[in-house]
Length: 294
Image (cartoon, rainbow, N blue to C red; front, side):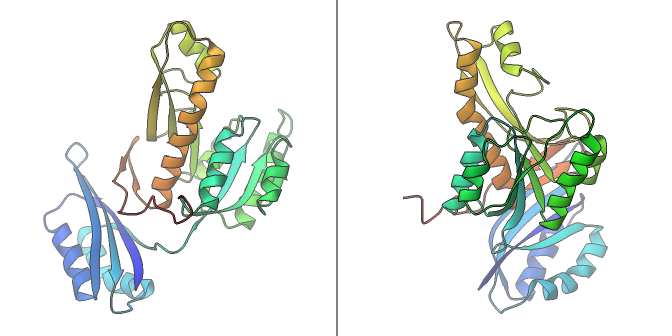
């Protein structure tokens, strides 16, 4: 029994849910979970439906049959096979905690992704990546070779047919051209609870302000630095007695968890862009589980 999901975005209208559920029932599909959100400010409707095909209907058949519903409501809609893993390129510099965490989650089956390459501007994690049977590419980036370096990066991404780039503490600013080309397909982890403390050394900025909470923010990358739509955030408490170095240490776990949750949401097609914001619907039942976790 094949398990699929359907994602839908369109203008708010009466009868959308009824049309989708009726279509799935008539085509031999049983809905296993469903989440929807009607944004009253933007008049946009968002929905993700998980379902099982009980009669053997293929994605291609469902997509073709669903075309009249798409046309009626002016939808942006996509069917996804939940058995297919999203192809991901991870980019990292010299802080490896997020990279290591993602690789571990992939290894135990807790993230439905296939890491098809790791790109770094340093050699620090070559051995760890190669030992995991993942291609490693060291692409140095300088002020003088940035266009050539980004062309090399994009070649790796395109040759690997990657669906997503994850910046796991990659400490280089991407060009506007690359951000636009990969719009909605680059996820970054910023070691701050945005929108506060953007840019470089956010922990030092936070320390200087005497904050009592520090956090991490995972967001889509746009040409506006640290301004992309936010997917996931979390925090940890700090006190006046702790140093900037303590902040860095305490922040590590938060960063890894926040990035993993953002990648999990994106890979399960739970994230919808809504202007400068996102709509992130709840995870499907058992989508966090893995037989290798015990």
